[in-house]
View 1: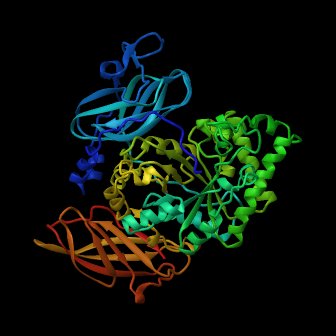
View 2: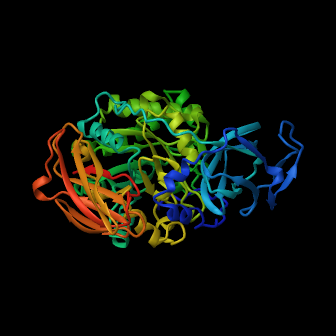
Length: 585
């Protein structure tokens, strides 16, 4: 039985406010983000906002202003703060809060539209949490904080002009010094794409097929789960075809990522509501991770090693077939709802490092790219065992925000030397918002079930738009990530006139190996159409343009370039709405 998400209070958020604004401004949406803003941060007190189902209080000392807001305990509870007379632009948003009852999340709304979640770490004192960036329109804006995971207190918010982000500093080197060439190449490929495009992903093989049938395109990344290879499930009769699914996906040229809902090695409660097959949840097992790690001679410690070795056998099958894996173990540890996070950060980090050592140094698994999946620095196991940092994002249905607050936290966690990814999402971030907010997520993987098919989390129209956006890499555009090179595209205006313009697109191989093909994509501004092209196979879908090599210009040696040309119908001074993306194949 597939694992279920922890129950969280949810409320539908209004959508369709911010995104149409961005689209209406295109191609000026990025320019809007660069609008000069006041130099000084501005503080807005929560108790001065509009209170809906919550109330002002003043019992806890240390607040600013005249008090704070509390009572976030049902789905619709929120405080809405008005920001008047804004010049517009991109701002860093900080939330001042208390969360004495454990880790919480609040849902953010900007001008009535969902804008992601804000993580609130447990604290008994007033603390600041980054909420990422918000793109304010000129004039009056509203910022709302809605219950989500309740029982916290909000003191104030601060808005400060967002500085341009510095260039990324990825190392591109795997933490496993003996990593296979395919694993090294995969990490290098992700680094080459980072900040330029986002890879699409979907959990489970059946959902991939549904998505492909619905949108006409397949994701670049398939998410799979080793859950039914857990020994405490196998001994109760479970079987799995996930390794076969991974081999089949690799044969199609796709990237594989694995999660492991690790059924506890022993001490399963196995009572109604806490059945053995729910044994990855904290409440369905009494397995004590801290005690097991503290006593290497104990039966429970031995069972930990047994389970890791059993999973290693399966992953070794992929290594033997030359399949690299984005390996995301012990996911969502800081949430505490899985047993590997139930005893706090110390045991979780120790278990992760034990797994790394056992798999890499004892079982000689070198096809793994190691993906850490928690945001809080207290839980981070260390740069020497993590290739990529990630999070799982489940904002309210229909909220397609850029999740920029969490993105910024993960960039800081990895000191911007490691790619940042969305290991799981319920709703897919809108590509337009990702560009506007400069949230350079490496990939996303949409969880299966209702998140994909219910029409509320991700409508079919939205899915089709995402999977036809040139910023989003799909399977057909992925290229040879196992032997990755590099690719760069540049558009030059050759001539323009009242009814159109002519352009040259230069494609250059910036990698160290020859290409076997290439693909380029970009967006036209509203109303622009391509009327003629040559030296490339060109297709359009709305404003999205995709170009692919012909037979004679598919192979580019390192440093070599080729050119193709197009004519568009557009007004003078036409420019493309986004810089072209490029992928080799």
